[in-house]
Length: 210
Image (cartoon, rainbow, N blue to C red; front, side, top):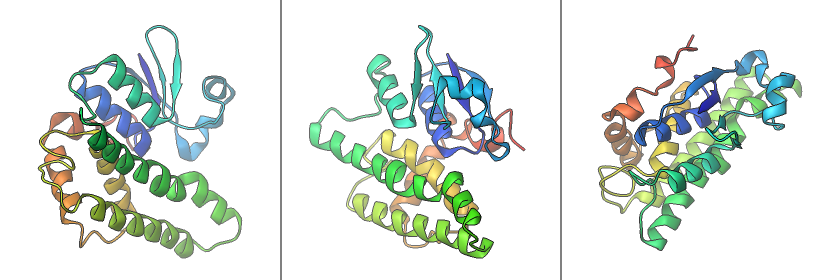
């Protein structure tokens, strides 16, 4: 397999964690987001959206969108599972993952922030936008899991929800978003980062890290 990504792309990190948890090796192909390499014709031929990550599978398929890739991994390599067996629990895990991947991350990602700058917004306003979006979203995520039991977000093993949480907290710190009042999220993050599949796939440990 070949994973197209960027060391600081949180969506790419989700997939790196999933591959590592499942014990699947993938060759890395790196595209520098800030230099616009994801818009190169060769990559657009793989993913017309010009977004990372993209996964080329062993049978020649090209998969895009991090959660779709992780669901494919779950279906084709079910052990260890990223989703609970119970249907209600699966829905709750997916809801948390989507809260991060659809409601927080896209609104504070590079593409949106670049658009704000192009509209003439000052840098303080741009970073403040990202910080506020992250803070509001993480507060809601904390409420979603407040009554749960750890050490992970949904029990004794990491799930799709944890794969989305850990990279988002990385972004939260980049933008200096407040993390007080998030005890469940931070304790789950600590449990995750104690595991090699999370720690070893961190941005600073990637070959293209700067």
